[in-house]
Image (cartoon, rainbow, N blue to C red; front, side, top):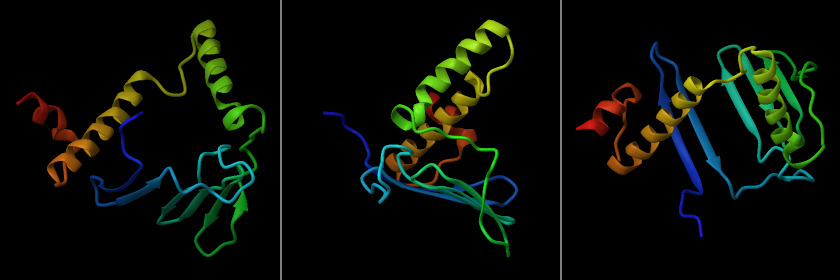
Length: 141
């Protein structure tokens, strides 16, 4: 059996004042025909509006005071698991290795994600907020 968390509620305080909240639960599957297509729904809200990913793969944008509209540049397919995201990722990596162009995301970006993840676990362990910039200093003591 895999030991780990099934849900999380994270509150972020960003430099400059913005705050963010991430409420995730892997057991609350969507009501769409294929709940594993997007593995859930996602909503990002900001001062100017919102971006939504629905469980059927539809991506929309909604500016404040305006109607929600489909994001027409976003193309998704229903091939393979998760819209064939694994195939698309591997294809991207192989293409970049062959043509020498930069990857969409690199190791440095992924390390930032791991740093935030580690801060979340440390915060839960301490039952107190943890500053991401202090994370590595704390672990070294």
